[in-house]
Structures are given as structure tokens and as C-alpha cells.
Image 1 (spheres, one colour):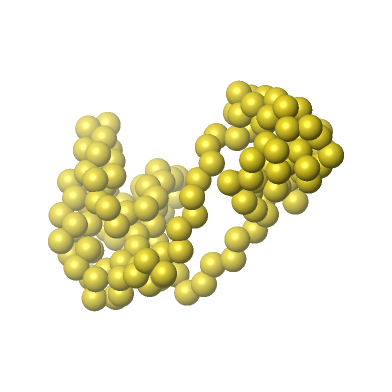
Image 2 (tube, rainbow, N blue to C red):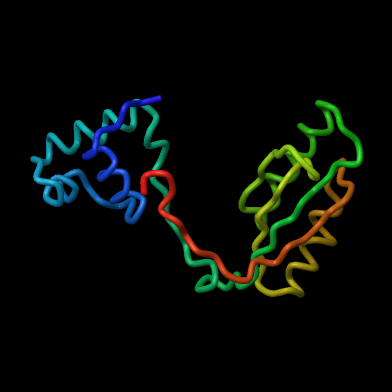
Length: 152
């Protein structure tokens, strides 16, 4: 675990809001030179506090108006079936997130589709034909609120 000071937390909060901020912009915001801000970013990245910077796409603007969370319980368990399922599910382009979880289900998937008819097609033709698939439970996302996380 990395020790963070107040300026580190401020940098991280700013980057959570806009991952495209440059070291120069961060420096201007927080009263640092560009090289000092760059060194701080480099330290945070090398320490693992910043894993990657990502582009956040607007799914609806791109035509994907439906998001569904699937709870998946495998029919058979074992190292081979887990690996087979993971390899196959990551090849499905509509599956955005695959989480191996502990609880009522083995996996939680975030699936996007153009509409409910498109989701039904993805479910029938792609998800339900995955190796080891057993029980599937679907929850349609109605709205989503992004919270700032543990940095406050």
C-alpha cells in the first residue's frame, strides 16, 4: 500500500474526474511546475496507485441503450471449466466486464446491447451457449450514479 499525502489524493480525484489531464494542467491546478507534477504522476503510477487511464465512452450515444448485469452459476465447477468459461466469455464483444465472485453466483457479467431484442439475441446465441453455463439471472440497469470512491 502506498502512503498518500493530501496532494496525491487531490491529483487522483482530479484524474478520476478527467483522466486526460496532463502533468502541466495538474501542475497549474495545484501550484506545481510541470516537471514536479510529472514526477508525482510517475511515482503514483509506479507505486500502483494509478493502474491505467481509460476512455469513458457514452454507450447510449454509440447506440447501446441497454445494460444488463448477469449472475452466472456454472453447471460444472473445476479449474478446466472455469478457464474454459473465462476464455469464451471474454470473446463475446457485448460483455464489458467479467467478475469472478463469491456468493450465489460464480460470475457477474456486465452486458451491453442496442435494445432488449438485441440483448435477447446476445443471451440466446452467445451467453447461453458458453461452455459450462448453468443458471443465469438478469438485472437490467435503470440508472447509474458514479460516486467518487474512497478518496472522497
